[in-house]
Every structure is written in C-alpha cells, then in structure tokens.
Length: 501
Image 1: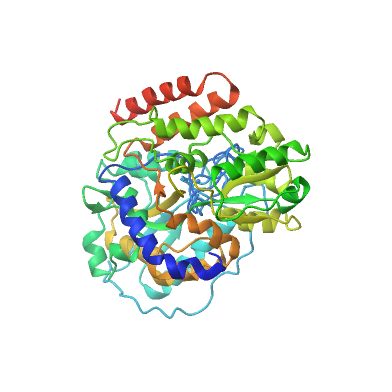
Image 2: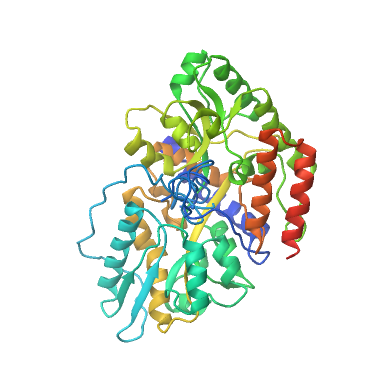
C-alpha cells in the first residue's frame, strides 16, 4: 500500500510468518470474534459506516471510527459497517461516495471453474454504502460471465446487518451467501449454520495458503474453513503536517515510539489550535497499545481474560496519562463524530485510523493535507491490529456448490485483483500484497508485518470481551473510575463472557 522501498517486496515473507503466529494466537480453533460491524475490513466504531477494510455495518454516529476493516469505515457514524475498521471499515455514511464505473467488460479468468447445480439461483447479501455495493455488483457481473448458468440476486443490507441476518437465519429466509464477521461467526459457526468449504475449495482449486494466514483465524472452527476473507486492514498514525509545523516540531516517522507520540501530542495541544492526539473509548484503537506492551485481552486458548495483567495496565496507564494531561481528546471533546472527521476538520494533530481514510479524505476533505506513518512502537515492540471480514455460505442453501463458487470467486485472486484497482480494499491474497501502490495505504498496511500484530479475536464471545474493554476506556476517559478499578471490572466482565455466562 505504499511506495516506500516497497515494504511488500521485503516483508511478504515476514507477513506470512506473522500470519502463522497470529493464526496460532487467535485462531478460531481457539475461538471467533464479535464486535464492530462491517469494514476491509474495519473502520470507525462510532462513525459513519459504509471500510472494515478492514475496519464495520452499524448505524450510529462515529465516536470511535471504524473497527473492522477496509470494508467499512467509521463504525458508528452515519452507519457502521458490519464488522467493520474490526471490526469493519468504511467511509462515513454522510460523506460523498466514490464513483466507480460499472463493470461491463470481458473476463480473462484462468482459474478453476467448478461444476455447479443447473439453473442455480442464489441470494448474496452484505452491508456497505453505494461505493461498496458497486464493487460487489461488479464482482457478481464478473462471476456470472464465468458461471453463466448461475443467477445471483444481490440484496445489500446497509444497516443492522448482523441483527437482520440472525433473524433471517432463525426464520429460514437467510441468503445463500453473505458477509461474515466475528459476530456472525460466533452465532453461526458453533451451530453448524455455515457450510464447511474445505472439500469444495479443493474442487475449486482454492487453498488456505492462498490467503494471508492471519485472516483465516476467525473463520476457522474445529479445523474447518467456514468463510473466506474478503478484505482486511490495519491502522496507521494519521496526522496533519500543519499541526506539527505550528508546534515547531518534526513530523512523525516510522521509527517513532510511544514517548515520541506523547511528546508531540503535548506540544501540539499546547499551541492551542489543535488537539494533540484524538482517540475514542474504542477497543480497536486501544488494541495496538496493548499488543505493543506485550499484552492481550485474553489467553492464547481464549479461556482466561487477561485485562488485569501488567501489560494491559501499562497500555491503559499510558492512554490515561495522555487524557489526564490534555494531550488526548475524544471526538466529542473536539466536536467531531469520529477521529477521522477530526483530522478532516483540522481539529486534531494525530489519530490512529485505517485505509478507509484514503477515500474519505479525498472525497470529503480534498483540500486538507494529511499524511500517514506506521504506528509507534510500544515498550515490547511494533504492533497493530488486523481487521477482517469474510464471505460464507448458508449451510441450508439449496445450491451449496454455486454458493461456494461465488464465495471463492469473490475472494479469489482474479476478483481480488480487480477490487484492489478500485482502491476500495486490500487483497486478501498473499500473491497480491504488492498491488498496493498508494503511499498512504502502504504506510497503513505495514502494520500487518509487525511482530506483535494480531487479530483481536478471543473466541465465540470476542464481541463481549472487546465491549468490556471499550466500557473500561470510557470509564477512564470520563474519570468515573481509576485505571485499576476500570480494568478490574473489565476483567470480571470479560471472564464472564469467555466462560460463556
């Protein structure tokens, strides 16, 4: 996603290795996730919705921007993306959307064409704003050229996707193919309502090794692949060069540490024109701090909450310190819906946001100069959080082969390569990591190569665990309780969730 000494040229191997580590640490074998709605895969948690990326689909005003991945952006703004910036990611609903020319060409597809049911007619559904919907209208058009005997009825659900899909599944009216985030993986995986794709993947010439390993972690349960990742994203340090110029300090670099962030935020804030560092009470934005301190929200087997650990406390103390001295401001503090908007309105000097910022800024604040560098290193090293969403198949579909073919086509190398060209999302294919050419995307995506980066996935009750973290942060930011007391309560709540109570 950038052009600097193409980090992708030198880090594909690193990312693969990291992917295996992340998969081991947070694989659904250990459990799935459940939180923000749609994004590539994650986006604001309380800002408009579309990423997640990566990045997700809710409908509320931003307060923490995307959490899911490039497929959705702010998670709570005009509407959130479903397990989206984690999460889910998409640009705010209220902002203008990109104009994508509908696909109307030929398809030079060289992949395997599976045998599917004659006369298959399937329904495909997901969240997303008009730009995301166009991406999938085009994907379907390409698919139907490869599989002319299959008719796909695309029925997007921009808001409250998870709630509506769960209701449809309970009523026996769920679509054949649909987006899957941690929340839906948690709801449908253990109940065998998602079709295991492994055998059909073999027929379709698709291998798990085709995908960035870490992305498959939340879609794997009991050794079975229940969905395929459609997009992904990480976070970057987004900043306004003018704020640094006004403060008389150098701009951020990829070598920054937490101490550099703290010092710069204080100086920018002291200038009186901009807030120093913008961050909402959001588990997704807090995760890189925790990972960078060597911590996690739960044990590797996803059975024990670890929110009262020294590592998590180190991260919370750091954030609380910034809030106490005024260096950290929430979106509400500066009159913005989410921190991405605070950057666009030139209200804050820095924030942690994802790839959804590229189109958001281009479309909403085209005259504002902004930049991105990878996230600062914590005391234990460089870390980021990965947001991702997938595409799964209804186990009750009348046309399982055609449905699986669509899921594999959309997430496959051919179609993913076409999607990358639109600037909408990062490809989930290992072979296409070098397709990212936008400098801002490149800087943000470097977080995927960091040694301590991981998917914030803690098993079937991931959403409840992450919610406990956000609740604790909110208490800390409001001064309602101390860091110790807030984390103690979060530990209790998270442990209850992990115990399935």
